[in-house]
Length: 558
Image (cartoon, rainbow, N blue to C red; front, side, top):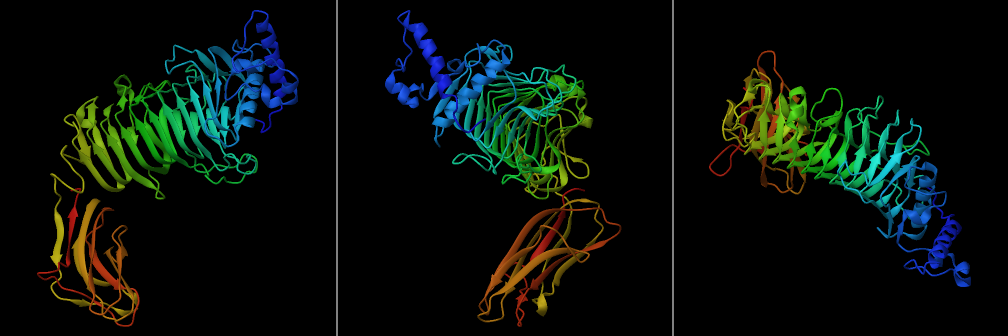
């Protein structure tokens, strides 16, 4: 949309025509006076205020009856008016869209701030009171583009792709920091919310968009009490691997990242996919049957080994009528080395078969859920823990019909990972250091405890506590401990401290759950310590009544 307000004379003409018509019947328009010389000299006096109706901007014919040119012109005029008058305020203007069948060509909202678009509809797909239908010929990026905007709210609107083919999305977020107008938002989209809205893609379309709503380069995006239909597979996608400024082609500041988003009390009949997403909350939402030929349940998934971090999935349900066709995972955690994990799945009813939840990386808490198995319990897995997963707690779930899975097989339903109530694995090492060991100069690692074992493949929990005494007075030195497997460091087991005064000692402690693949024959796992700098090496103290120096190594999957 234009950053100027060239339609002031049109507003004045339209409003004067309405006022003159009403004056004949003794009617007045609240907040308006008949334009006189003062009004003509001051165009601002002709503005209707912060709340307007789209019908106040009928600049090209009657609106709300399916006339795309008239509807698009009115919407552009209303947005230009609100944009020109809001300065940098938040939610200063409201544009009412009365009940009607509005048809718009592609709409791009650019550098808007502080506008509420309020229709008269609800999330009920049968009651399309305020219908925002796409009237273009297809083949475009989206019917509605929100670009570098902030503090926009959409209420009670039925967004409809209306059968247009070869569209990338129904709604797409973009950022264009190079040309966005100041003092408005430049670097991303911030605080965009939707309530009681419907996003409709007709199921019978031959070439549907892959994703209905693509929220990228954005923060604080909220969907409350919404119904979102799937495109070819996804209802919503959060984040993008990268996102270029459409004007310059250079990566934007946000570069596709979605930060802080929520879907609450909504109805989703397609997958929710994360590609680069932080802090997503899905609460009180029903995952319905996807509208494609497979008739499978909708899922929470990723687009490969992607970023999905700090997520809460709470109080949701899955439509069991689509489960019989389901052959995948309902909830899939992030799987990017860059950032994934900290997933909480709490108080959901999970109807499915095969694998319900898969934790690929990082920590997770799975608690208070009710998994319901279909298709025979022998094929069902409640929680599958991937090779790179961290600390995963699975507790207080009604899991009678399910087994809980870990690498490489399944274990009992009372499993609690890393703070175990049952199913303790065998301990392959449990030893204390019997005599002090002097460290080497030059930063070389010194092995203080070791054990040889043939690992079957799976999670291993390593716990150690080391007491180090410093020898060099007045010199700050760094001490590092870590675990080696056949001389190679085991990721996640390193710890470091710094000491300065002679005779000063400190404890270095670590508990880590790591994955060690199956080995061909016995391998040596060792605990090693190094002093990284200094000419006078310190020492590792032996275990005694006051300080424990030792370790334990347990197999969690056996």
